[in-house]
Image 1 (tube, helix red, strand yellow):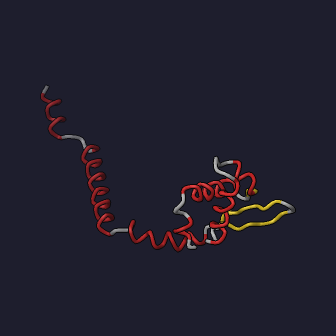
Image 2 (image 1 turned 90 degrees about the vertical axis):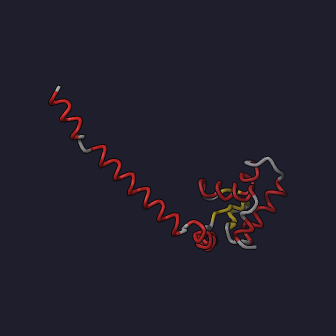
Image 3 (image 1 turned 120 degrees about the vertical axis):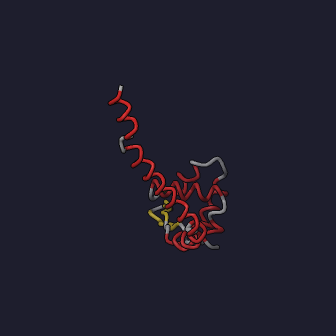
Length: 120
């Protein structure tokens, strides 16, 4: 199973986020964090292992799970083609230019206002 299929399930995405923030987490602790059965968590962990997104390290009687984000790099590269649309970049560049131009105009003193104050 590839990374895209593995992360299609919300519980598996939540497990990945948990491992991202907490590092190495025992399987029992992962199961306690979710309201689904331990066997269901075990199946999710197996899918994540088979996709290469997590590694299981055995320490004594505990099986610790650790995130391995490498398979996500390929997926992120593929997704980038949808988020790096040149047309959007041009629009954002034009918006940035307009914002800076407006700021410059507002920062410049208004010559008409200065003339009115002098004549008053």
